[in-house]
Every structure is written in C-alpha cells, then in structure tokens.
Amino acid sequence: MGPLIVDASPSHTLADILSNSLVLRQTTPYLPVASIYALAATSKALHHIVNHAPDVFRYLDLSTVQSAIVPYEPLDSGGISWRAERMDEALTEDEWYSGPLLGIFSKLQRRHVLQNVQTLVLDGLSVPADLVREIIGEDRFNVRILSIRETQHLNERKLLQLLRYAVRPSRPAGTPRVKGIYFFGKREQPPLLVEHAPKKKNSRSSSPKGVMSSQGAQIGAEWNHKSSEALSTALARTTDKWYQCSGRMMPKRLSLEWAETLKACEGIIAFDAVLCRGPRHDPGRAFVSNSDSEGSGLPHPASYLSPAIATVALGPHGCEQCQSCPEDPAVFGQSPASQLPLLSPIPLHSSSLRAAQMPHTLDGSASPPLFVRCEDCLKGRWCERCHKWWDEDCYTVSTIAQRTELQQTEYMENAPLDGAAPSKQSIKVHMGLCVNNCLVGEMMAGAGSNGMWG
Image (cartoon, rainbow, N blue to C red; front, side, top):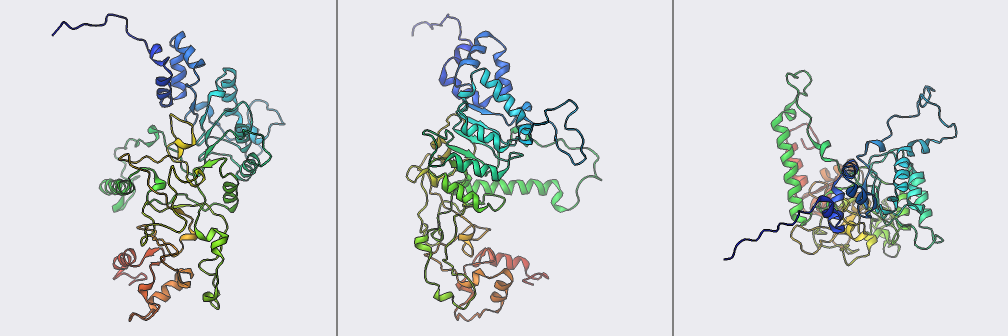
C-alpha cells in the first residue's frame, strides 16, 4: 500500500461553493431573507452572488419578514389621525395596507431581482386584492406559484373578480404567468411559533381546572393525535392530507362564486382545492326520474347540484363496498391537472405545477388515488368519525337520510326490529355516524345517562 497523498491545494471558500447554481438553488430556500442579506454583507464575492445569481430569490418567503408587516391599524372609529406625520389624502385603504410589500417589491426591482422570483409566499400578511392584481397582471412580476393563505385585508369579492378577468378568453397570449395559487388551506407555522412558552412557577390561581387540564391528560391527548396522524399516514402511504382520511379540509363552507371561479380557471390556474366531481354535479347523470320521491315533499337523492368545491378528503380506498366511485378517482400523472389540488408544504426547489401537485409516498411507490367530495354529495353516505363512505352505485340514500336529525332519531327509535323494510339495518349512516360501528359505540357510551340514548 503506497503512501497517503494529501491535496495541498487551498480549500474552497463558501463563495466558491455557492457559485455552483445547483448548490445555490438547494440552499437558499432554507434561509430567511434577512440571513441572505447578512451573508451578502460579509464579502464582495458573496454580495455579487446574492445580487446577480437568478436562483437566490427564485423562492421568496416574505411571511416572516418584519418590514412586510403593517405595524398598526390606520382606521379607527374615533376619527383619530392615521399617523402622527402628514399623509396624502388621496391614499386609499388598499394602498395603505399594500405599502410594506410594495416597498419591498420596489427595492427588489431596483436591484434587478424581482423578475427572478417564481415562488412568492405572502401568508398571513396584509395583501389587498389590488396587490394580487399587480402580481398576476404586471410584467415586472414573473411569479408562477403564489401563496396568500390566511392573509389580511383581502376582499374576496374583488379577488374573485380579478381572477375571472385574468383568465378571460380575450386575455393576451402567455398570461397569466401565475399557474398555481395557495389560498384555501392553512399556512405552515414557522418553527419558532410552535415552541411551547415557558411555564410559570406558582401559578395555581391562573391554571385551568379540570381533569383534562392536567399535564398527563394533555400529553396523552397529544400522543393520541400523533398516533392518529401516524396511522392515517401509514394507511394512505403519504403525508399529504388530501390523500388521507382527513375529513373536512376547510373550516368554512365556500360560496358558489368560488366554485364558479375554479371552473373558469380550469387548465389555467390551479388552487389548493378542487371541484367536486360527484355524479350529482354532472347534468347528464343527475337528472333522473323522481317518481319514487313523489309525495314525500323532499328532493330526489340524485337531483342535480350546482358546482361546488370538494371540502372532504376521504382517503385512498374509496367507497366502503366497491373501493372506487362513479366519477373515478383522480390519479397524479394520469388525470388532468385541474382534478388535483396543490399540496402543502409549498415545494422549495421547484416552481412548477407538477411539483406542487405531486404526492410523496413513504415507500416511493405509485401515487395513491384521490377521493374527495363536497358535503352535499356525502349527505347520509359518510361517517364523520371513521370516514367510511358509500357511493351512489352501492348505497341509495333513502329520503330518511335527508330528514332533520330530530326526524331521523324519531324514525330510528320507532323503526321495526323484526326485519320488515325499512329496517334499522337498511340505513348505513345515521346523524353523521356509520350505523354498524360508530353509532353503536356512541349509544354504548351514552347508555345509562340522561341523554338521547338513556
């Protein structure tokens, strides 16, 4: 064995390493903007890289930048002046709230780096609709993926109008440049905001009382939540919530205008939500004979529904009986992009629609199917606890399922037990719980109490 030869040449500097575009693209998305500029101040070489390399600000997250936050509210009910110094009386409210971000964009434009921004994250900031219009419509922006989740001072009606205008048939060729918008989901919390606050000593009077407030109970609840998430992830083979049995994905019911806007944007702009494709939204399949519901005063279970956004994630296994659904599940790589939602977290190293929609499986296997629906298509078919559900081909929801909860309860209590139709066993879901499993457990838990099942 010969002697060990050691390279005596000078070692590479950090500037040499970051001069490699591949290294730079993989590194900078993890650095806050303040850290990037602090790095640029350390040497002329790094300053040149930060201000001239196109990959440094390809991914720009302004949600944690202090100067992007509006420091105080300008409007009040008492007629007090907006600011101590004089202001232009022609300044509109939207211009005020856009001020911090417009200032940052002006600085980036003067440094000739604004055009390099392809993924822009503005979550939680003051983002009026007029500012969104500039980002989508003005040539100085080159944004492909835009995130405006949980933003403030954003007029949804104006946002809907500008989106419909941006995708109008007469729009200029190559517009809009934005291909994906995160709006409906929750933003990712920075690591520092998730840390627990230090506990105060001798604070018996301020601590909440009760069994569930004890440290043991809280730890147990946290472990139960983690165990549930781990099980859901293992069953779906992915950490993406849209592909798990996550249930309701949005805290509030979305307006019809949003569904119509997503329909108008199909194939042009994708969102972190998709339209429900249940058969009741298809005019060719929903209008059927309603002779069996005549005299009941209730709509036919298969009557037509207007376009609606799918708000319930049902998991990767489909209908409890046939393991599929009439509309066929969406599959990444096979289905149109309009049937697939943008997934969180936002991709750091690519600004393509494909990267934002690609589910990541734990074992590297093929992407799981996507089963999602609106709540109207799941009425009487979906267990809100275990997330089992039955499609239209496997379970015809009777008019019983469309009654109010009180009417359903009275029917269940008075229904015959001797098997005569319709029997209790003919109903699969009652008051949001599957009859065979979750409803039985609920009844047992309430046995002996003074509640409904007492």
